[in-house]
Image 1 (cartoon, rainbow, N blue to C red):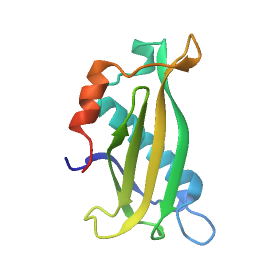
Image 2 (tube, rainbow, N blue to C red):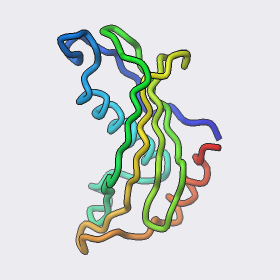
Image 3 (tube, helix red, strand yellow):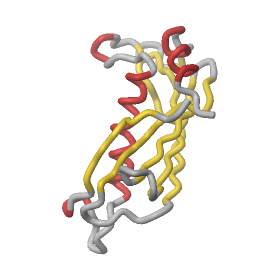
Image 4 (cartoon, one colour):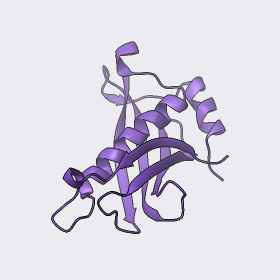
Length: 137
């Protein structure tokens, strides 16, 4: 299954550093927005609809490939790398809109979290099905 589009952005000047490149803070922010859209595509719904369960990111690895300059158009595509009993490993790839320049890749491990018991929780069947449908080859 190909990755799905989860975010589009522009590298506005106020998102960039004194060297004219997107700041690390903004990469992480954009990847975070993309992760919410991916979780929705997997079948998760906002915490307000299920206040007892949430997600906890336990690992992020970002590989910076090509600098993002002021004015660059950005596209993030996302998919599932691996699914466990309580966790999901996802990949988010930031490119230009034509996918000719790969700017950065975030690989994240996210755990389903019981907010009341304060411990990991099993992934529900609906999310497991969503993960299966969006697993990248």
